[in-house]
Every structure is written in structure tokens, then in C-alpha cells.
Image 1 (cartoon, helix red, strand yellow):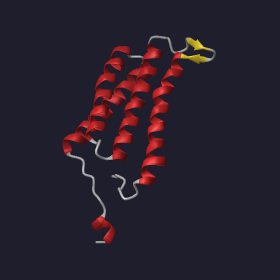
Image 2 (cartoon, helix red, strand yellow; image 1 turned 90 degrees about the horizontal axis):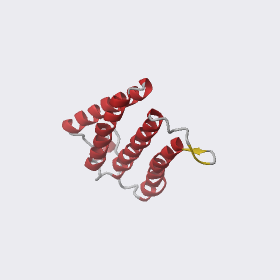
Image 3 (cartoon, one colour; image 1 turned 60 degrees about the horizontal axis):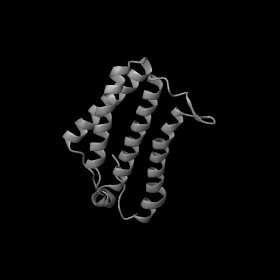
Image 4 (cartoon, one colour; image 1 turned 45 degrees about the horizontal axis):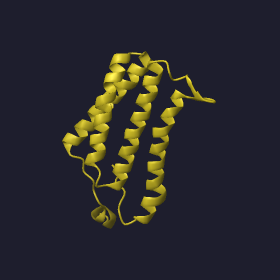
Length: 137
């Protein structure tokens, strides 16, 4: 065994967490399929388990900055995605707020928030904490 293999950190995901993450993907896919098929009740209903599980996953991984930043970015992505879906379902996505800005454009707020969280991690945090190994699977 190489020296690197024996000294590198290992991040192990408990089976119960992995099952929750896999269920999260099912809810997320059902939400997006519902959006595509314009199944409003199912699409709106799937927002809640998808968002709640993403928050729980972020909370459970909070001790690892890499995981926390990525999981919070996923949570704000789901938030943006869900708002955008609702705006299309209820036909206010193309209504103008001001100038050329429509209500759909408000989804950019959480999308950009996610990008800023990841920029913080990769441009600020990670370079200053090189001694911490990045979590990879």
C-alpha cells in the first residue's frame, strides 16, 4: 500500500444517509418531471421533501466545509428551480417587474447565491486551508 493511501483521510457516508440522499434524487426527479409535464400538484408537493432533505443533508455534513458549501449550493439551486417552476405553473414568469426584468429573473438570486457560496469555497476557503483534505468519493 502506498504512503498516500495509508495517510489520506477517508470520508464514509453512513448507509442511512446514503439512502436519504438516494431518496432525495427520486423526489428531485419527480419534481422536475412534473414541471416538464405540467403536473402542478405533484410538482409543488415534491418541492417540500426535495428541499427538506437537501437542508438535512447540508446540516449533517456541516463539519466538512467542502461538503457544507456544495450542499448549501444545492439547496439554493433547488430553491431557485422550485421558484422558477412555480412562476411558470402560475403564469407570472413573464410578467415584467421593471424594464426587461421579469419574475422568472428573480430565480437568479438563489442561483447566484449558490455560485457565490462555491466561489467563496474555491477561491477563499480552500486555498487557505490546504491542510484539510477535500472530501471525494
